Image 1 (cartoon, helix red, strand yellow):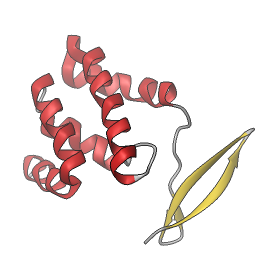
Image 2 (cartoon, helix red, strand yellow):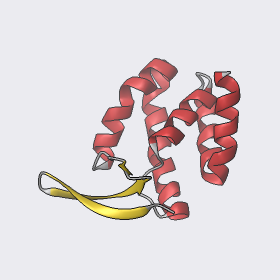
Image 3 (cartoon, one colour):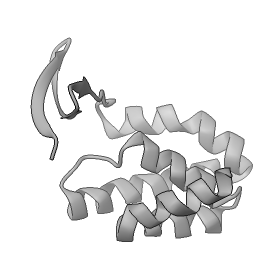
Image 4 (tube, one colour):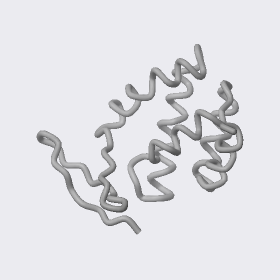
Length: 114
């Protein structure tokens, strides 16, 4: 189980998990995370990028309710994009799978990566 600690980034405090002595940094603020994901959403989903970002925002809410964390880890977000296979419907299914069992999502994404 990762231990949690606080790190101060300018005037904000972020609680982040520490795995094996490595710190995982998280962008603070939903709008900032959305902006970070915008380029990838545009590359993968083109004109559906805005809707994809909305789905990812809803995924954050569900992730928080299920796992008590602000947002899914970056690897889970990457897996969602991979499993989406360039379609909005695929992204919705992948986001749902991320919430149900992110390990199954990881297996599906790894299978597509080869």
